[in-house]
Each structure stands twice: as C-alpha cells, then as structure tokens.
Length: 154
Image (tube, rainbow, N blue to C red; front, side):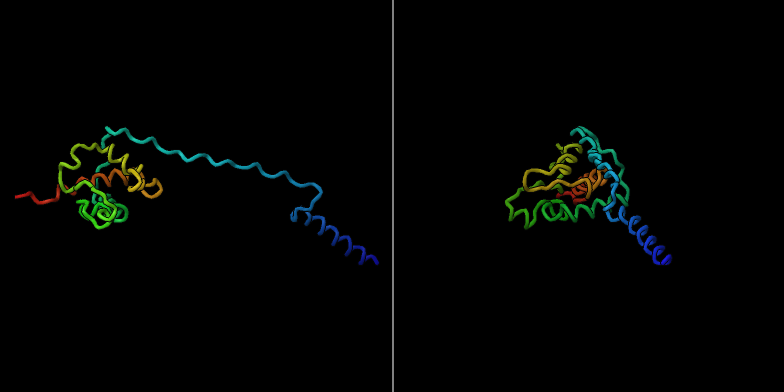
C-alpha cells in the first residue's frame, strides 16, 4: 500500500509540475511584452547637385555591370543606346547614353534619385535591399562610361 501511495504521489507531482508547461497552471506567467521593431532607417536622399562620392575600382565596376545587365539592359540596351525591342514595344524613347550629350546636363545626384526612386510607371525604383547606395553610385559611373567607349564619329 505504501508503494502505491508513493507512486500516486510521484505521478501527482509530475502532473503538477507539467501543468505550467502545458499552459494549464493555476498561476499563468504574464505574456512577454511585445517587442516593437524599430522602423527601418532610410538614409536621406542626396540633393541633385551632390557629386558621386565613390571611386570606381575594377571590382566595383564589374558589380555595376552585373547590376546593369540584370536591371537596366532590358530597356536601355547592353550598350546604353536605349534601342531595345522592349523599349520599342512599350513606346518608350530612351536617351542614347552612348552620345555624350545625353547625360551632359544631368548631375550624378539627379541620376541617383531617378535610379533609387524610379521614373514614372515604366521604370521601377532600385530598392535599397537589392542595391545599396554605393552600388547605385557605381552604376552611375558605369552608365557614364558608355559614351566614353564609343569610337569617334568620322
């Protein structure tokens, strides 16, 4: 009889100890306060007159070329001339970046703002999660290089 009583007592202790784990305890712990995530901090957009702060390297320009090929070339063309089937089908007239005059009047800050925020309903913004500010600045250097690599007209 003593063994039965001890066994019943042990089972009762285990059951009582397990109740809080199952959420059936007499005294429930207060729920942990909700943690409010801090809002994402968006760096201020540069003023249009801001000059490009990055110095290009071979590696950074290779990354810029890759980003351009993924996100820009389908409309602006592999060489930046803006003459693509997609641009034509969307009835877009894009600047020919192989012509030095096409970007001559645009400041780097203007280009940064356009790339970062998009333009109209045809050009989507380049999200910060996809390309950081440094990558966008390097992309601008890459885009400006299109007119420098073109042969001189004869």
